[in-house]
Length: 149
Length: 175
Image 1 (spheres, rainbow over the protein chains, first blue to last red):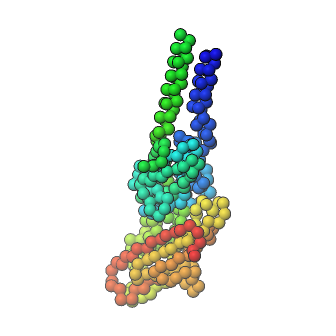
Image 2 (tube, one colour; image 1 turned 135 degrees about the vertical axis):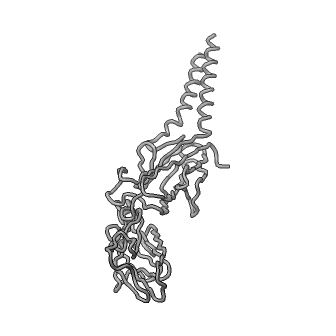
């Protein structure tokens, strides 16, 4: 009898562990936080990547990039959505001087915001282009349980 | 003994729960952005030279009336003082944004240029915008808009003159 009770308890614990894993969807999911884009300049397969080259499957055959020495702003290029059952703090941090983020008029190298349960935020990306050639930059997404401090 | 085994299992179970909980406290991932930096005549807000006075210098549109222009044929070194020159269709502005695949995605293009030079969109006789040092016009995909130049050399000194032109494009038709 005790064995059964223990087994039930263990089962419950096991189920409890599984629960967050069920929320995993086809989109890029980082700890229950979805990262996706509705823009043609992004590829949503596997990890979300911004790809403004002819290699992007959405490339329509014209406009094969950005010009040098220019500033481009793409409104709402990234959408970040919290599918956890608790609030999270999301920090986006550029690893390049050429990439900045914005949710209002001001673009910054790093931004943070709190997402409540099921809340989403759309983030604009500013790109500063330098010389002709391929530009490859990175940014990090940090997710912390609870709201931002 | 069996009780102990059960307890041990429970402890293992609890540790796992705590372990998984700790994973949610903090997580970090890295994502990439890849961009092709291309010449002005291939990019989203495409600037294509139409006259030999316009060319691409390291991918950037440059308008140059001097022997330094790669199109310089060996004659006609420049413009003289106290003259006014009008050049229609110096370059084209076209809208090559990928959003156009899913319906019209016009942009409002604004051009501003320094003193002594004026620009106009469309024909000189029937301009869409300008002439002036500031102008704005809407550009739809597959409908390039030509930009012309007026050089007013009245009371200018001999020698090289340089002005900057800046081009801004904002999503949506001009208001």
